[in-house]
Length: 503
Image (cartoon, rainbow, N blue to C red; front, side):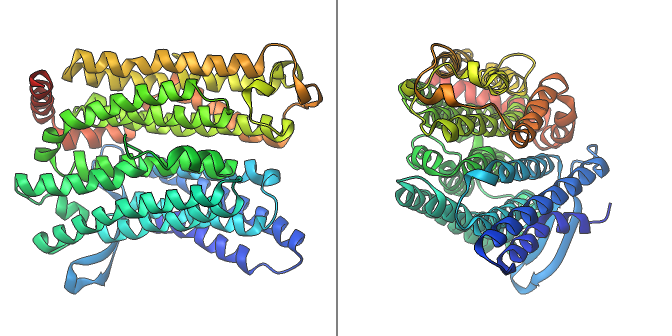
């Protein structure tokens, strides 16, 4: 397939955003025009992404749909983009969630809706560019570009504490990315290029790898987030409008995990197994700590926010098991988590928008007034818990299969996410959906056809990922197996096990 298709997928949202900003007319007319331009543009991007998927050859471990243009040749910097199996699944996730987020914000985003939709379009372009970048400078530029629209969407259209939430999100992420910039410059100074495939073949000394990996762990650990770099997450997820929260938790947090995989596990194989015994406990702490905090929350949205943090700890564990099963599981968990967590935020928003409250104690008996929502919310709740038949179960199973190679106790502690997740998610479902009808719940009306069009595709994909996981694992598994190699992954897992046992 021609590489122009990846260029269209990346920059069509940018053109859509500019078209929205240039739209003329009264505020109501401009908002309506902006919504429709954003929706049709995002659907076109989704269609093109599916075409990329169909034309992709998973047996080729290298990049496909490549474009390389001379940019600063004297400095070894070029505009180099392309996708391998790992990149492609995140391009598909971004393309899938963006039109659904636009649909979710169709009525809930009031005031300057055209500007909001333009910000969504700009964020989609930044994410597509980030996941397809094959030059470190290009990656850094798109990574930083995600900050501007995301911060604006939180700070302008968010809740009462939106300014503080936006400021925290910006400062944490921008501060973390400073370490990435320093690592980028150091790698360029040593290798004379910022081309990622060339850097993957570079032979850095162990001490240099350790310093570079530390910089990348800090930079991407903030976005993941990795404990204890998570302070921005509760306010950002809670105060952001629902479409933004869905994109933050569903896709933007995955950029941190993607960066750790691309510029950690795969680029610095010697240093990464030195770091694994320290990163793995942080992942376990995140799983357990966030689960306890989630159970204590009184706000529906905060429960889901801390649930997301807990599951991202599971992803960190999978990445640093350093074997194909664990890394495959981490990638699969990223995809399934992106779908499920966005769906849960949409369900919470549908109730809160009608009842005008997110307070769990003020709600009850929603199933009697909203049976369609109750049914879909049950599916997504079970998926978040890791019920067999859903995508989350496949991801968690693969992570545990990878963790058991490292340590029995690591697998056992990481597996507590299923038990503790069941406790707080089923408690939330029981209190809000069942029980006696409280307050304004008696006045609620069930999901509209437009809301069903947002939630039903998420339900279908959740079940599809649980029933036929090979649809997705076949894309990225060859890349991971080729990059790690069976002997290498066994050696790294053995080393990690020895260090953990010694500690």
